[in-house]
Amino acid sequence: MLFTAPWCGQCKAYHPTVDKFMKKHPQIEFKEVNVEEHEEVAQEYNVKSLPTTIIISYDGSELNRATGILNLDQLEKLIRDE
Image (cartoon, rainbow, N blue to C red):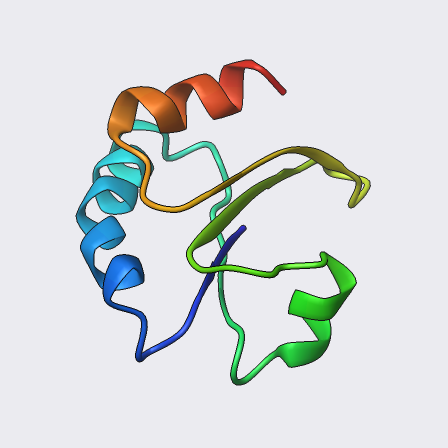
C-alpha cells in the first residue's frame, strides 16, 4: 500500500519508481491510498508521514514499512525483507 496525498511533492516524485516497480512485478497488488479521501485507513495503519509504503500480507497484517521516497532497489528490498 502506498499512502499519498495530492499536495505531497515527495509523493509525486516517488510515482515514477512505483510505476517501474509495478511493471516489473505485475503479480504484486499495489494500492495507492489518498490519505485525504481515506483518512480512516491512514489512521488504521498509523501513517504519520508521506509517502509511506507498507507491505501487507493477504490476511491484512503489516509485514514491512518505509517512509519517504525509495529508489527501485530499496523498494525491492522492502518486498524481500518482509
